[in-house]
Length: 59
Image 1 (cartoon, rainbow, N blue to C red):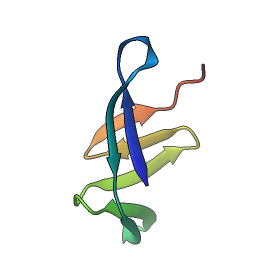
Image 2: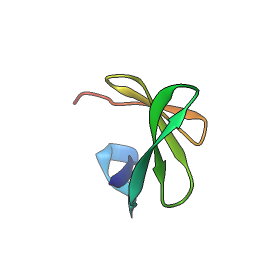
Image 3: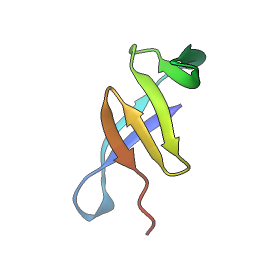
Image 4: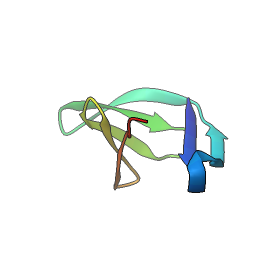
């Protein structure tokens, strides 16, 4: 997977390629990334990564 963080004016501030695998956490499927971060889907456009919540923004 690719984790891309955008900076000012929608420029790429960080671009990281990670591998992942599926795991169970509290009865819910999650992804565990190669950097040991857990990615949990909160809803179709919101994820929690390392405990921080990220929401996809539409252009």
